[in-house]
Image (cartoon, rainbow, N blue to C red; front, side, top):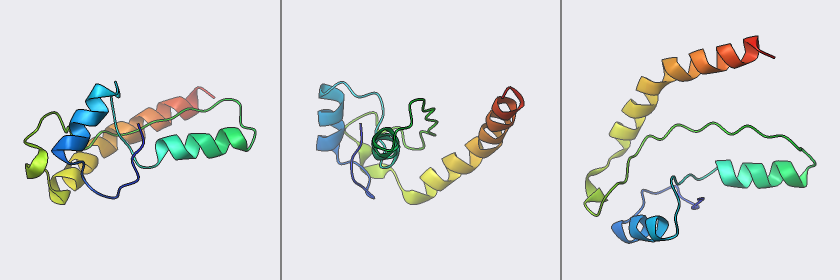
Length: 89
């Protein structure tokens, strides 16, 4: 699901997203795919890094530093993933 951001979801938004059946929330992937389809792109691969596991109502404790740390921890894995994908093209 896409939300406009750039903010952390409130506990009410976390409940709404869950009730609507979304598995993840992002600010850019969904709008980027919409634009790509509108532009005529037929095949799209979306890769996202989940940096904020907003899994409950006590979501207020998430902070920007934790999100940056999660992204930094995922970076080597993402680089390896992209390298392997490019090798297969």
